[in-house]
Image (cartoon, rainbow, N blue to C red; front, side, top):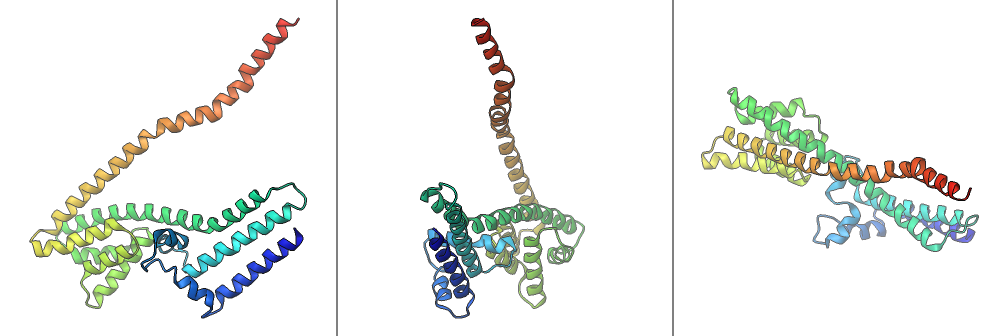
Length: 267
């Protein structure tokens, strides 16, 4: 097992060296896993897709795969070292390696999920603020630029608005640029809103009408999410009752009472 641990540690060091070396064969192989290429979704999951961009960690796909490889080998090495003093089966060592391999992806997914939740709330705020500014008489483009300068408290949405505002300052159409940036980062609600605002000009439909419809849709979605969360409360409470209160009731009341009855029968 000591030889196995040494081999695994040497493999981890070699993988890191090959992954960070420029123009290496490892990088050429990892480029095949590009999430934007036409590859099966099962392979694209290995590099976390848009979640890596949404997380804001600044990692590249190569760095994520290198981290997954290193953590997987490190966990196997730790489990193999522990097997020297404890009777650990090989299946548990393999499970430790699998856990180490998927841990970086789970970390990225968790951060991205939180960023998406903040982005969805920021989109609601963006719609509300834009509608108020448009109702006060400001053009919708000016209102969008003003909100982009203020910020909405979400790194994803603020980055999207900032990129669209810079493109607009250089002469690009504002809302196609906004839709493109939002689609690239997976914020579909903001992308659809930007598309509708861009279409409203050609269809002769006012931007205020689009904003009001979007606000009602977002409010309906929020009500549906609230009702869904409320419907799961009963199940969560039952789970807490079964896992926490019933074992305590058994240990403190039922089992002592049962033992007392048995003691009374044999006296």
